[in-house]
Length: 154
Image (cartoon, one colour):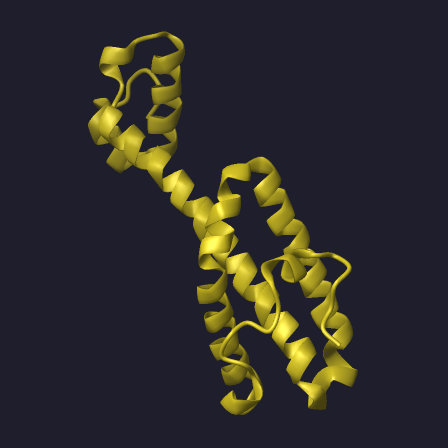
């Protein structure tokens, strides 16, 4: 299937997403707005925003998980702290890149912080076998500390 002998645009969306995308971009560049598959295009645009939010939440959860390990998993700290710190640095940098590319996500980060902390706490308890009483229910750090490249728990 080539660009010019492809099926109608709405059908193409289901059959060959990449070709649909190329054809849609071509139609918009040519200002052929009546041929654009607007319903699917809007769905894809909305999906992009959801993906960024999902990635931000995932990265924040991983960051908090490793900060929790560093703060509370004493039995493994001597063997694993270097790797945890590396993951912490990586997640902080990736979150900073996301926020630089989409500064409007910063309020969302604040909105999801507590939920991500609770998720990270549960994951940490599952992975480490630590007692749930040993890790605070409420975040032991602020969002600013979590994102600060120079801050680590004692």
